[in-house]
Image: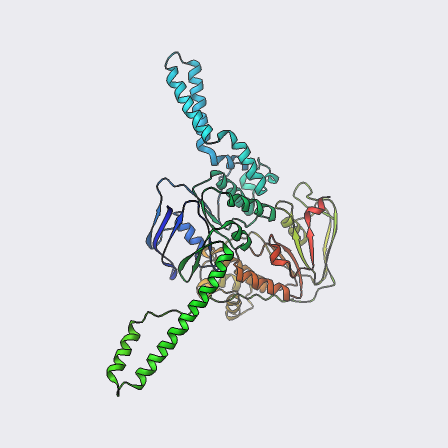
Length: 511
């Protein structure tokens, strides 16, 4: 039985058609992935299913009494609450039942009559709590807190003090504790390290209800899915099996589409040639061929859209020793690891590894001078100019074209447009406000800004978050060719395994 039915859904943003009469069903306990290139509308579709957006046309029907939970890319939390209180909010209805039960207990202790009715009501509430595993709430919270790495943050920490990535993990944890009939998850592995992704993978594989997950993490998708929905050219197509099976079938369908297009083009050429040659001598037959051409449903040329390309250049050659840190300790109040000497030489390409909360982002900010070390010294070499890609960023209301023109006023608009086009951004993308673009499109704009930065030392904190496979491959190729120095934080070893020269395992520095 279908838990969700979507029929003839169409949606347009500004003058851009996102979907065109798509229809699909999500079945009970179905574990589905939603895939497609950056900007095709995956997040938009989830927002429509969740009721955050209203489509132009079409119907969305949830099975009666179905509860769904939606993990958004951009989220807010109630100020003044702690991590633990937020997680306990997943069971607010059960805590309310407990309060009612305690009130009845107080009434029974003071009542002289109607005790049997109160006792019956008390028993009903207690049975509901037991059936809902109310007395296992603490262990459930502990499992999620441990699995997502929230324990290190401190459960009494107020949510307004959390970073964007930490807030996303907290909302994911709350959503998992709620156990809705359908999970709608948008990039749930962003901000998770390998250990936490492994835990989430196992959790979702065992999940007893349905989910629809948007993710560009192919390994993760391959493990958790039994169905793939592919969004391309405003259409949605369903594939049975995991992500690997989808890729195999998709390659076949692309070949078949290309062959069908080529066959039709040959037929069109043949008919057009006959009409041209026989307008007078065989006018009746030529007219018949014209009618055939008019009635023919044209197959569009198969295309995957512009292929993204990235290119980073060394502005000027720095000295041989790019950075030196002596007996450095980092942190905000307490040191995150023992005093350590670090050195980066010209041409080094270093990946920083470690679990969430261990201090990878803090390390980058300290080495760049945005934070002062708690102990020790950091020195950048002469002529070293860093270009920094931060994990979290402000969402501007400017268009990409306006932002980059403001960033590099010495360049012509033509130069800026050329750089944006390299990254696979169309004219429509670059004229939209940045905060209306998809996460992947925003990442491409930030990478364009980095390409235009006069630097010789790239410092990147999770640059592949939100990027699709083609963009990741293009970025890998660019970093392989880059002749400068790179310091990278990434939770995807497959992204950097072929081109880094060294790996800093921060967990080892605690010893």
